[in-house]
Length: 305
Image 1 (cartoon, rainbow, N blue to C red):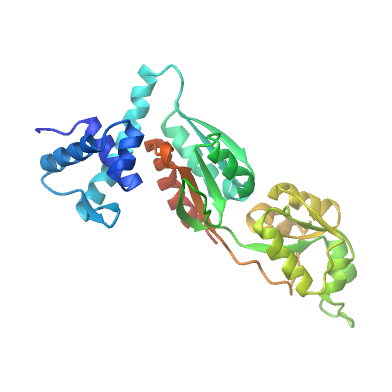
Image 2: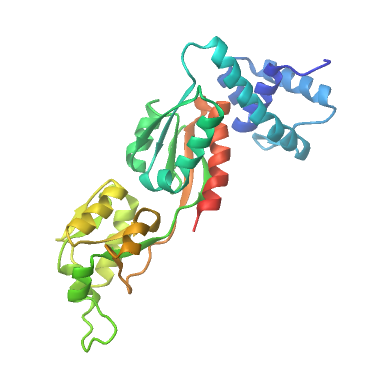
């Protein structure tokens, strides 16, 4: 073979993303022998091996990794150019994620992808993992961002950067009434501060609800004042509007802390950071989806604090 074709490149990218010839065959509607033949032809043209077998998976060789890392952005760009002429409907991707991820870094990635391809369209659903995963399983999303690794049949995951640091906050009036402060003769306990009014947490279905509830109980809090909200940004509004108390991500409330509308509550421990993960179905391993993963991984690592 004198020169690789787009079909050879698409095949190699699919094998690299999925990790098997059989998976690539399903994605590309081809037979496994046809996939193997294309890879062998491409390797013969390049003069080196792209893949080696490790157990049940096909792993990229160092040269293979270098080659496909250069090829993939060009392949995605070419697909976009061709779609402008051949496809009446713009290329689209359905993304599910939480408010924090979108605000901290994912929105920047999507903006850059759109500026580089005006035919690309995003359809974004905001929600927590327990809402997004069923949508992904039902083919209503192409890819989702979750906090914590998801173990779900038929879904694949890839780790991203860590989410931003959170902090326990309340309003100045609640803090002045019950919180300890410099020069005070009496220092009321944290239980008084926790139990004197509304407390806001994520919904009961969220892993964070259990973690935050345990912290509150450990410091003398009772659960009768617990209110829940499944939108992280709205939760900050409710803490402020109700003279409430809650655990909020700094990226969403940094302006409120700077202005004094909310104040940090010392003494309550931070909730341990969790990793972000991209989650997708094997059938949706398109080059566009993987370009989003690659760019988002780099951005999330740079944005983690």
